[in-house]
Length: 471
Image (cartoon, rainbow, N blue to C red; front, side, top):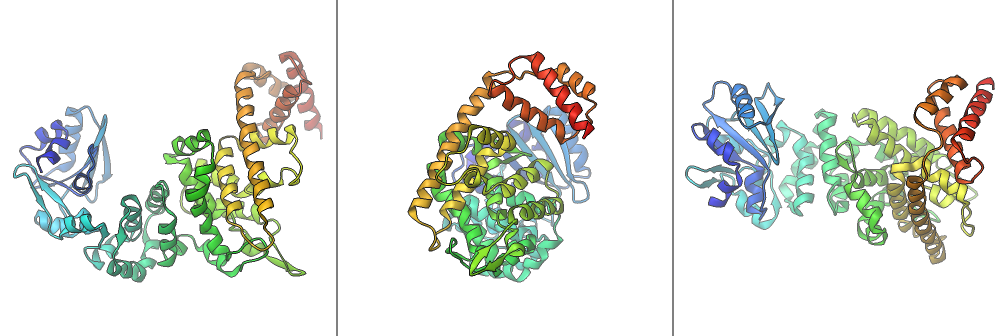
């Protein structure tokens, strides 16, 4: 067990040497699971009058940042280069009582580095070996209902199973999740979606009732049955997209696209996680727009309505504008790759370029979502020819997008910087979407060689802007 101590930064060992302190929780769990480099540590400190001052001084001594996570509960964080450590007041009179107040047995582990001993009052090491998520008690879940959701995030991260009694606790207490702050719920959801294989865990969240409490917008999806294009009821189709993305689409996407999804972050979360949330949201507008006309199921305008619903969810859960706007675009445009031109006709270069510019950073996740949607429809009206033709459309769009981005990088803007500001001023245009639309149009004229110099671009922008202002 001595190797656990070697994982703890020496600075922390020295600072805590005279304190009645113990390493607890995730660092021990991850070490026992074979993690070779641990960078996140949690400590409980007993018999200390002023933990905040201790942590502030420790941060100063180690050239670290100091964060007050929860002053009322006495929880503080030090962030150093390459590691971070949380310090908390004990939740009991001794370490055992503190550990018994935690969420799951696999996290109720303490380490005394002086005695080189693991303290394990709930037999969590056995559950680690058996890959089991087991709640210490129902009361512990009730004390912090976020733990109901965290069970699934841990299960997904570690590929563990939630044992039956804990599942029953979750079902019984699922309604309590609504008492939890939106930011905490969102963090758990995004963290789950960042994992590689999330489909079955999302399905489980639906089955235990948690997901529909967090997203009541999912409940109306249960009303819509299979139809000519969809072999699954709408609620199942929604989750099928995540499955198809994780099992099929990722194997078909070009390397550049897949790397973009995995390595691009929006507000601290992977673009791939936001894509999967987009899969879950893409048809939220269908129940309210569902009509059956002469035996045909129609959902006219469901994409625009879905965009509105998505915006409302983003506001309710306090998501960043960056994340909400990305999701809105994915929902609004999820059919556009297939509607940009008739199936047997290639889209024009102009239509493609406008599409690429409008989507910008959201292009890759949109293509992945559309591909997952395509592979999730197997109704009687869907033929292999339809699937193959639409897959070719998506591949062509990806190839053309790459060529487009290369050209965008190599061909400088004809109107930018101070000259753009001057043109806007002369045209007397207020800050608005009009300016963006004019720049889109100008860039198209540049690509089509109708405008070839900065002077022509300046003159066109001013004249066009003034004419729009008169209208």
